[in-house]
Length: 380
Image (cartoon, rainbow, N blue to C red; front, side):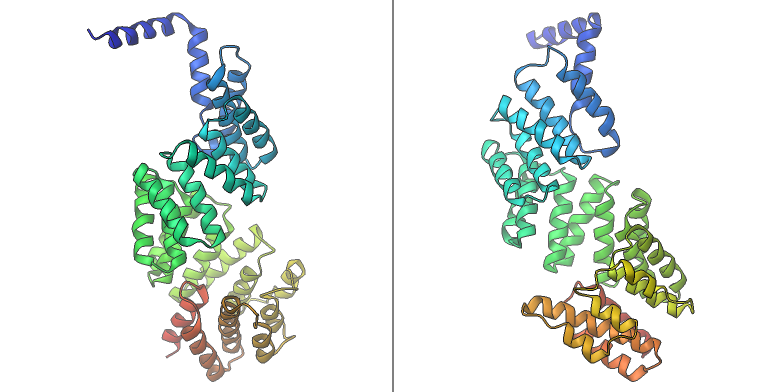
């Protein structure tokens, strides 16, 4: 028998004969941060026991603090997370996972600069750490530096081809770049590797209806809702998919109503709920909903147009902005929603004119672009 095999057998005998040691190892294993939020409380308790155990020393102690830090940021408790990660780094300044977890905790506190510094340090300490590249890639993406983000996500996948979230992150990036074929390929792979990733289904559903696959979008949004029944965005997007299919306005209204209950301060949900209510001959609740909305910025002018306070021309004028990208997006939305409002007022020719402008000028990837094209196909 090989010497290592003898040692393994000896270790097994020791573990069997020592329940205390077995419990300690069990706690360390349970403490490991794996990101499944349903296991957070049990794992934090295991970390607590491990840290109170005098056998947890050196790098093992740093790892326990780092793991508990990970669970705290997953539970959206960044202050406790930072306290634990700071202690992990004090105990072992060369422990990469502690920097990754602290970076995520800084993101919880809306401090992207410190987060970026921590992910950079994690990459420096461990250039083969797929999580570090993915974390830094997301920060590049949030900064609008899509090329560096793509490079980091691709490196993360190269290092760990079975890392489902890296495919999700890159797929979401491809979606943002308008490269929907590559987006779908990555999202498909993410779901294959992790069939319980609600955001992967949600994002694939978004790509599906952007590319005209509304049945596929409905299926994915429904799966996303099953996995996360409190996800307002999934109800909203499924409502849009029902709206675009035609003949499912009642289903669309139900989804927009649920999305509004979950997120009553979202102006776009209020607009779509109003559209479906009026199409279903249900009294509008927009005036009541508007009391909870921010009417200082965009799309407040569209809300006010729907309430009869602004004309189409005034809404279009309000869509103007010094930033060309912002102006393009807001003008797209002004044309689409004004076109929908004109349809409700039986002003068919004006509605078609506005919807044609939206269909031609809206950036690809905007819900309003896909919806305008769908409406024109139905109305002609």
